[in-house]
Image 1 (tube, rainbow, N blue to C red):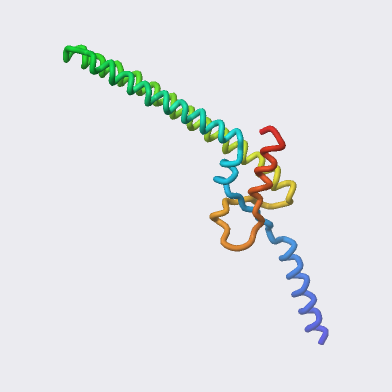
Image 2 (cartoon, rainbow, N blue to C red; image 1 turned 135 degrees about the vertical axis):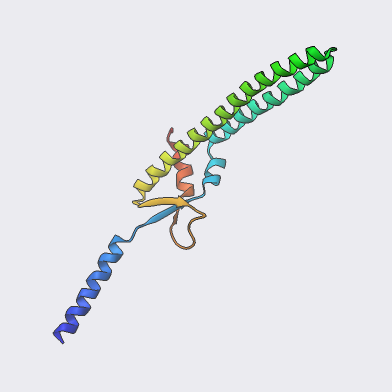
Length: 149
């Protein structure tokens, strides 16, 4: 009988320790956070404006090309325009990647703050969670609105 009690007590303690060690996980809808983050909204507008500038550049160059009269002038113009366009396109892509990285880093910093405040072990993307976890999307949005990142 004493062995049975000891076994039950040991099992109960084991279950309590396993429960105490269970990780608490939050999840975030990154897209929703981006859509509600003013810095991200402005960054998208900036990148879109730069993209429109690139399109307008090509429209202007096309008009200039049509005004040229000799094949040699057209060839030289094409070469020059291709070099200029490549440089502008690279600057556009760099701007886009920089803005995306800045947004990601700011959202990640806010999520880390929420993780600490909520005493979570991790925050994952909501598409990874099947059942359970704590939705911290709105908490991260609030953190981004109240604290400067």
